[in-house]
Image (tube, rainbow, N blue to C red):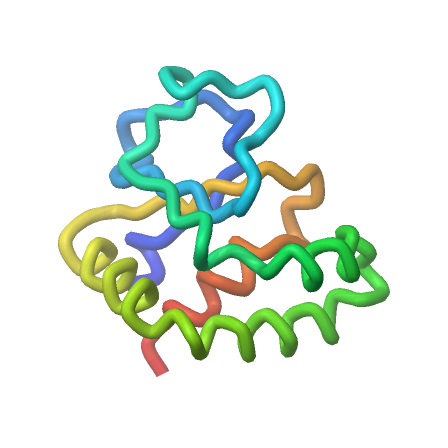
Length: 117
């Protein structure tokens, strides 16, 4: 499934090989139109809670703790995780995020959580 599950900044142009484009941010990204986003779906409820997002503030020093806390939050979203896994079993899925930091964001953690154990 790893090859079928990728992450990408929503500010990068949509590409045919993106497959299902799924936004995993709770807040709509600034300056992105719905047509440019070319979304298949928006899973805003699976994104980190506002409190966790504000606490993390994309601070790499909080990354390890953020990953643990977000994984804990994801336990409440088993149905959504299963839906994402089912999508990835059928075709490529691109998890879209708005953060500038491509290494420390919720899409990275979400992709990890979706990997087979």
